[in-house]
Length: 392
Image (cartoon, rainbow, N blue to C red; front, side, top):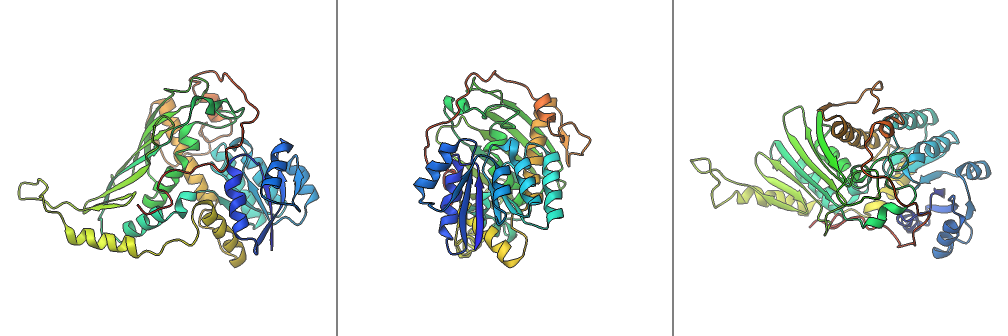
């Protein structure tokens, strides 16, 4: 049985704890760690973790618990690398919440620690473990939509003004960025998983509704790929209704999550005919419907994959390299928005935006952070978006 330590017991830890409890015969949560002890005790009581020990620091936990198999990092982003690297050096596998780290430099340090330890490093990207995206990828990989020409990614979320009152949120130093980093990371990871890594990025960002935060609450970016295709991505925490979607336009058909297949047919003058390519649409719908549903989805799906990867001695579906790719795209968005220039990928180690502290030094402060609340009242597991766990 694999022994689990969860470091950071804020709201996102609910999703992790609930997932591990689904696999009780395979793993056991033996340690909870948080700088606020009342949070660890609340989780312990809420989930009946009677034999679980609590600690105030990951250093104390690692020194006291030599038999930990997996350290699950659910802390604010600015300490992900420190905790992950310490756990890997201690001989533990690591699952780390998004974003992977506060900089590309820290990502590479985590990857180096993983390679030196020989242990597993996996970065949370729960959208890959949804039927909607799993089936969309199957439809895309079928080739029936043709060559990809354009993708539209709407990472639309809504957060109230007080969201940024939490002590670590809304600052470049502690949170590392705004909605682009901490919300759109899910969709940015998904689109690079679907379409691959672009060659160039151009972007703009703003703060239009949260004057208690240094960071952006709205950004728009365009990715250009080596074959000329474009992705248009909007990241937001100002969209009421939180309608999220990915639409991929191939030269033969349109496919999307939530699912829709549409294939236009050209008239002699180039305009679309009223009748469309019903056969191609039927074939795409068949691929989508016939792709078996995932046994486990979202965080539970990814934790199932992590447990399997350890048990079967194989790489997880989302490893450190994959986690870094998502952060590299986000870093490119920020660099482009800040420098007002087109950014070429990959970002080299001598770039100031690659280095730890570079973003914090160069980023604009839209507003001064005006509140610093130590803890919010618990609201349970964080909602992860609409229709992402369903193929509709």
